[in-house]
Amino acid sequence: MLLEENVALAPLTTFKVGGAARYFVDAANEPELQAAVAYAKHHKMPLFVLGSGSNIVVADEGWPGLVLKISIKGVEETARGFFRVGAGEDWDSLVAHTVKENYAGIECLSGIPGSVGGTPVQNVGAYGQEIAETLVYVRVLEIATGRVLELNKSECGFSYRKSIFNTTQRGRYIVLWVACQLEHDGEPRIEYADLKKYFARNPHPTLQQVRDAVRSIRQSKAMLIVEGDEDCRSAGSFFKNPLVTPAEADRVQDLARNKVPDRILPRYPGEHGLVKLPAAWLVEQAGFRKGYGRGPVGISTKHSLAIVNRGGATAKDIVALKDEIQKRVRDVWGIQLEPEPAFVGFPPM
Image (cartoon, rainbow, N blue to C red; front, side):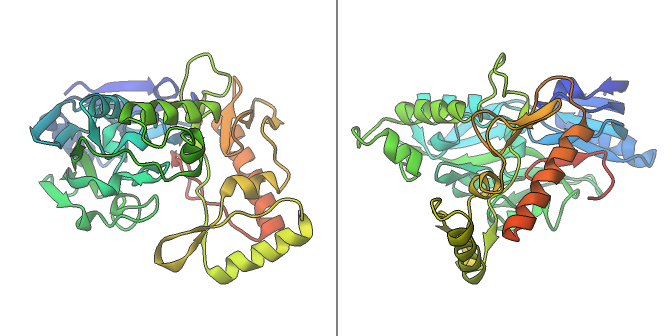
């Protein structure tokens, strides 16, 4: 285990903001990872587990303890369509590999930045698919005991953008490996409105065509990390689509008829009988347009849910814009937007 000190974290994130880690370990295997966890525990220092840095905001003060970067690699196809993948593998590269080998199940999750280990934590989903649909189990390290366990899908407690890893058991486990079952020669998923529109004249696209389409759509909305793009320094969608009761959805819909009669509020069925409202619509109709600027930070020119670092921004700048958007949406629509990224090194919000 190589222990480094005062390692800058901003270059390891897609937002490119934040201070340094007091201590830092880049773990390429399970023994190194276990040693790092034991070191942090022995020295009673706070531990933060870092993947690809695509869904976090690091405080300007940095992290006062140990940052453990997960770099466990490996893609093992142990049976037809059964993939066991190291948490440190790049997610989009995995999707590209499975699509090339003609395996269906995660093609609509193309272009999502991040590492494989982060996908079950947030139950990553997009364009009509989510990782919970194909996940079989995750291999994890239990931080308190040092034990390595395997948790099956039901034990992960998946729901919309949630799992036990970011809710009830937050901070208890570190994901080491992810196992998924995909379908060889399976049909691609064409359920999302943007994809249906894209393939209106091609009702039977290939998996590769669907992957290419998803990446193209994501890039048009600044949801694809492309160096040189003015909107690439972000964490993707900054706010989750709120899930509300039907009565609450009706309340917002009635409010919308009065406030913006020419802008119909879309609503979609959610889990457990709830209604999913589009956060982008709420943000835009609260007065925030694509390209909105607030000094060195702003809203993407392509997508109203992406907060971007225009250059030279600080974490404080990003949080200030987040707060401004949340307050305005709450004042106008009575809805509290929940951020998607994790906030690292901040006091409880």
